[in-house]
Image (tube, rainbow, N blue to C red; front, side, top):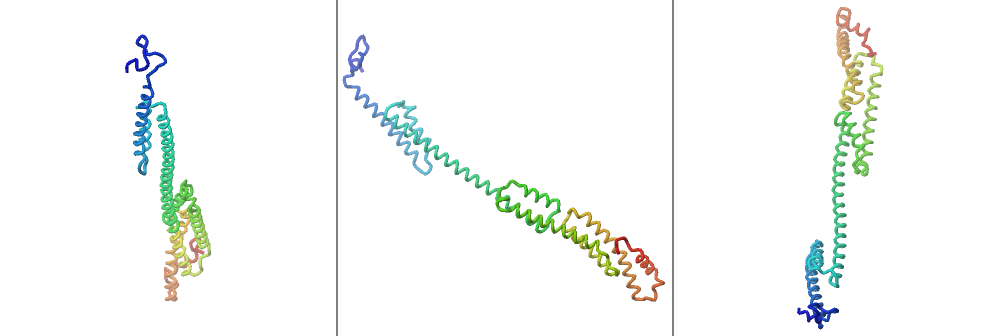
Length: 277
């Protein structure tokens, strides 16, 4: 514009204060309308970004931010509106981020808890069945029980699995000790007087020892029980021999003094093996 448009000049400089001949108001109105147009355009872009289930807050914020940073609107009513919209959008985005983080955390936590539950359920069922059916050797079972009782899996305690395994293991050990004591009592009992009863006694003792070692392999009592079984097995051939001689004599009593086998049997009868009486 010519300098005179602003109210005249002195030495080619505008006078002060300016007197723009009523052009100031129209110019201000034009600038304001331009700002409002830019604001409306930014609002349309922001509203479009906020459509749908997942609102694009970042894109909406960028539309209003461009009014300030790109178009240089740093004051006035449009600037204030833009700032108000930015404040609302940033709060909404922060709120959604917080809710999303909580939901993701709950979901991931649920997955982890389910994984722990699945692992504990499988370990519990396998260990419970092994104790009930006595699968595996005693040291391995004892080690597995101790590992399970000291596990940090929360489901083991919440579902009562730890207490159940501890109870079952205690019953297992008590039953093993009871059977060992019964076996020890059988071994320490006086052997029957007759040869046939004595023979059957050692057969029964040997079988009981074998059953115990098969039922509780590598238990703390295994070596002792195996020793008892060896003793019983060593006495069986001698008793079989004496029993055969006794049956021979019963068939022909007249040959008792002449038969060599009878003499050997009498020696065994007079000097029975230790612990056979």
